[in-house]
Image 1 (tube, helix red, strand yellow):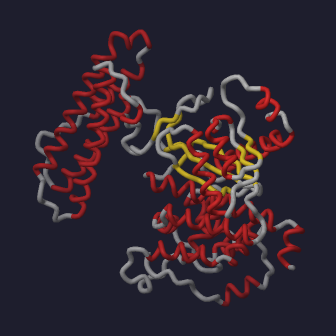
Image 2: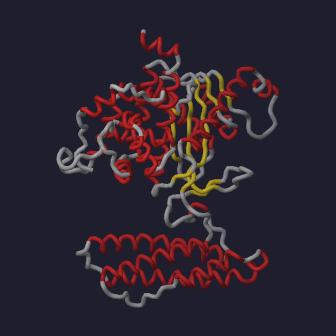
Image 3: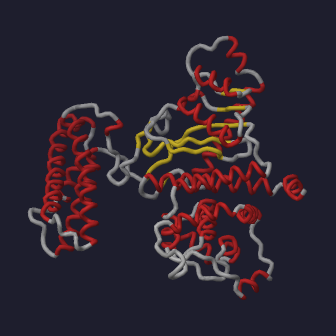
Length: 467
């Protein structure tokens, strides 16, 4: 990225504007809202300038306004980078929305480089500004709060010890071959063991349950030995080339090999403990992917998906469909732990506790009911989980107010479905936990802008804004 200043209107832009081209109503409402809140663009601009020595010189890069609007469009339409670039270049209405107008649209890689410079903290701050703007417009008052958790998947294959060992062998082998090519000489003691590792991995994958009883241990022992040999060779290659970091490419390759050697050690250790030693390895000590080592194993008691790999995400929704809170959780914490924190964040945003608090039975505990009552929540819609209900509790859960609150809470299930299907939040294809949080923040931003646009498009709201 270099200079990020926006250009002036050209004669071609002026001529096209005279044709009366209009955006679709939702995009037009989002565009108007973004124009009224320049603070959002300023936050993007700070990230684009971060780390640049002379941001105001050099070839023109993507302006903050173009980056923000392109990111919103990408998540609203659930496009990838290539389709985003092609769609913008294809029609003037999307050029008008993103701010490119008649200028050439850069390659898809330029969008990727710009989005990667953004941080999760910036997206979180932008979402907070959007919620504050909705409150100032009178679209939201914070009277209701619905909360739920879901799981967003990371981009990994189903992990088994055999496939993880195979991944370690083939990745380290590829890196060692590349290192030898850069050094211009063969690495001493290096042998390509990918074929031997693949054969044993495939043999383990094809075994029936009966065959595993007698043959699994020997095959795993062979596969672990191959992985240890490759790791030892990689460490020997690093030691022999220590101090020769004149070439930046070689230095970067050394760091990458060291990184994967550490992950391979963890994979070998857990395979040895579990298969050869018969030990029950705790989930928090396991690694589920050498490419996304931050991945957690989540068990939520779902029949269709008893085990999920990714991260648990907490979402809180207001009465108008705005997601006022979101958080990527570490591990698989119990849902009931998040009630107090959600009330604190709600009070920080709206200045008071919600009148109605809705959640599913996973958030239920006597402590949480007492906490909500002390914070000033009038209608606490959390169904009892387990145990025999006393007559008073049973009568309360049959009241019209409780049932209405549960109907409101069920709306967040539909919101999660929209985020998954329409905003691309079901599976994160980007690498690293920071990009994972970026996806969640961008999907939430697109959802909130869509909700605000729909409410601003209603006649009653338009008359109130005009007044």
